[in-house]
Figure (cartoon, rainbow, N blue to C red):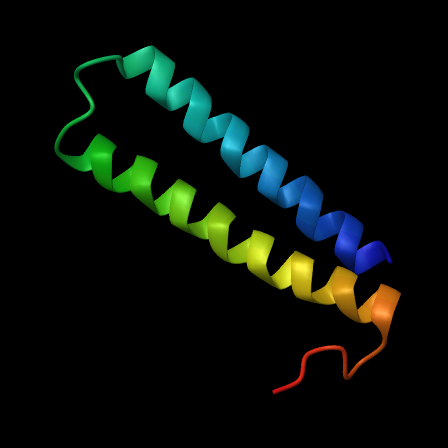
Length: 67
């Protein structure tokens, strides 16, 4: 459960940083700032997928998906 919690805290942190970046740059989110923003969003999305899988395994067992 510690790994699941840590992943979710990491997602929250990355999303908060992306939010601050988005609001601080407003309509000037171009060039390298866009790459940084999208990198944060994609990293957070990937971590959500891993954390969701781990949470499902904790609740339903290791073979909860049919494939």
